[in-house]
Image: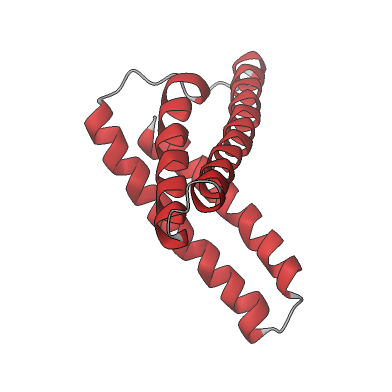
Length: 136
């Protein structure tokens, strides 16, 4: 196997670019989710549980579409990728919740710090699993 530094640099640039796009999509999803919840709950008097579910659903759909077509520019089967995307989300959520419980529930670290650390773990795991499994 011959080490090709040019290829390695290209792959590193591509992955870094995808990670930045993934972060931008995350910010947009957060804005969509929070805006939806806020408008439905506060202006349309929709029950907060329903508002929350609708907000997260819209953020999830936006996340899939933007990551498929912009972040990873995937040409794969939409149905297959959407199933993988959902499964990856669930796996990452379980990982995030486990890290949160370990840090705050067991180790008694500050709740906000534990949330922040577990969110970073979620984001990195979500990026890597979607890059190498969902949108490969």
